[in-house]
Image (cartoon, rainbow, N blue to C red; front, side):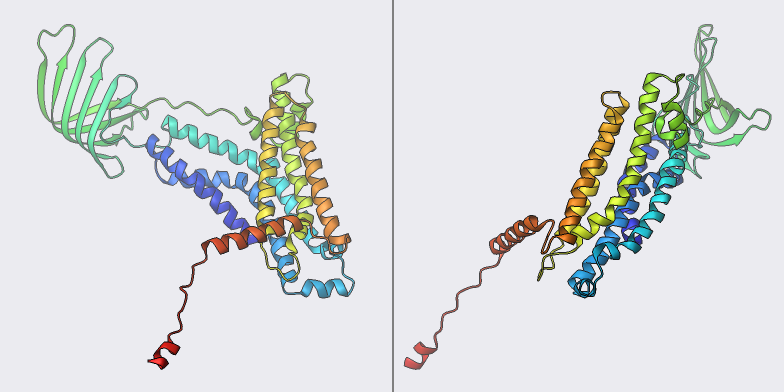
Length: 392
């Protein structure tokens, strides 16, 4: 169960990691911020990986008992499937409580911190380095371009700068190298110390451009003002469960906010409630037909859980717009999903010889035989020449 959880979470993280690396590289931020953003996404991925790990852990355990005929022995001595599910349901209670804690409290906080990291990266609060080979605009009046950067952006080579003053004068500066230094007197300003370059000054009151050659020149650069990130709670995904309940029934909140809060509340609760159906689904799909080792049930179980998760996401999006009642959009599919799982479990546990996916197993076996027969290598026909050799 733990192995399935780690694998599922890793696959979800790897899919997002590529997008985050591209985003951080575009914004010019440090690579370490990618792993901080992924860490804040783990609670969101855990809400799906925990049910998958629980279901596949129970399914693989019962499948091993079934394929080794130990399950037949347990059934023969009077242990029913319901009795065998006592311990799996203890795991389910613990993991459901953990998942409720994650979706109710931990996930809203981590989502808020993830959005804050994105904001800080775009605003430059994370110390993003100057992009090499591109024009970087600072305070809308300074354009800076460097050919090479060393020592994490503190040592620059091949510098070109254009500064437009408020009185209309323009300074065009080129230098062989430069370094950034902090300004202790004014923390909102940094000093770019240039070496071996030229300054060209032009403006409305200057008849001909002035050219100045320097060995060392200190250029003060005003840092951009970093805006403060918004407070938590401007989006429904960042509210705790009690906050969603309070907003959903508040008369002071807007109608759109109430729709979003009620939809988010029902979505989180139905995702946790779904976990109590997973042991029944796992057992129903774990036992293959007699004299068969087919793993079709494993594939079907993953498809069912992921498809149901996507249906819940769509139901939340539609109900948050006010187009449909959240009870119908989220608890309606849950009722259908529960009825399907209970019927599958009932067929396996209480119908003699019952097989919930017997039709799928038969069809899968026929398709497998047809595919193997189609791609099987034809053996060359052997010709017996012993009689011809004896006659000769």
